[in-house]
Image (cartoon, rainbow over all chains, first blue to last red; front, side, top):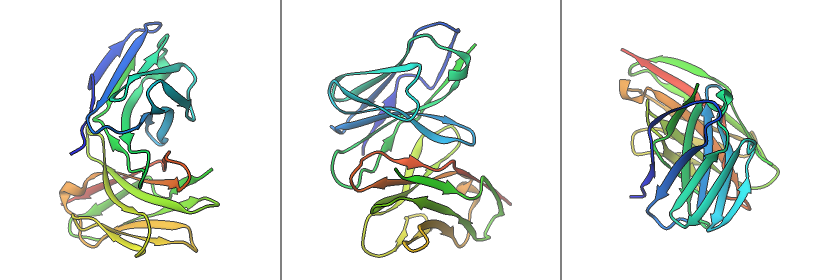
Length: 113
Length: 113
């Protein structure tokens, strides 16, 4: 079974702090994704990566950056956390070919105070 | 670019009653279609998918969805729900030329005894 793990289930940070969210997948998937999930808005894509050191902006990249130094690991960085970044963050991975089915981690609920 | 509309944000239903969750999409090219389920405090899990072939697809736990190309719909149904089906359900679409998914806003199903 594909396993996608995220470094924290719950995280509380202060405004202005630099925040790192880590995601690791164990199935050698090429693609990795970061979403944020907010009530009534579904999942919105922040960034994705289709290879090591490669990244592309999603629909809402402002205020975020990403890093992918190894194939299995994809990090989301909030350079200076703000209260409007309080949300559930979901990581996913998929193969670069086939049905593009995405496998999700359990999520990190981030609260910025 | 594709988009997804889930027509119902909340669906309350009694145990053993049928349920239908509606999903419409817009795209100018061929698509893959997915339904994901999110149980409380968990990440998303794939429920079923349509890639090609038979327009009726089924999941192992009794859900089914039918792809209707002319109406650009992919509605999800279950003839008899259980308490354990209480969850949020997301419809998603990807274009064959693009491995990103676009998600609907989600439908919360609450099953009552």
